[in-house]
Image (cartoon, rainbow, N blue to C red; front, side, top):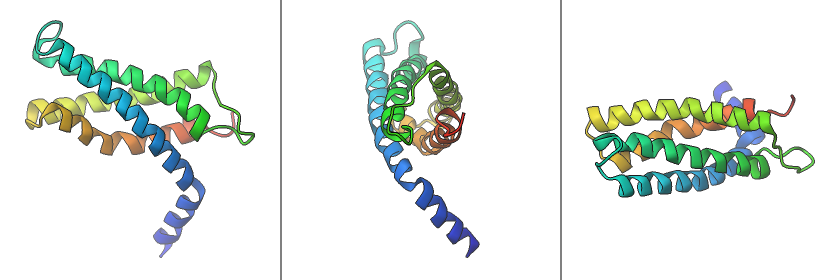
Length: 149
């Protein structure tokens, strides 16, 4: 019973913000996946990393998606109470640190899924979202764009 009440209060307080975060995240994911896919398409299994080009593709997708996340989260998800966009250098650095943490985790998981478990590259990337999306929301909500500075 306490757990149900806790979850209800949590949803009432952060639910709409999580939904907006999810919508922005869908756009971020599209940007990330597009850059990832295009990089794989352009590089194939050739240079610079051979069959491990998915790691470079992941890095380039991460940078593009993170920049998009910074701008869109600051405007649509975590804007101030006055509706003004929250943006500054400190938040940009925090965005890259927070997403950098989940990027490193994602790189490790990609290696596990692809090289150890034999899961194809695109589905492996999608599996990672189940881990990184909730972590990114928590990091952004309570650290990058926290209400009080």
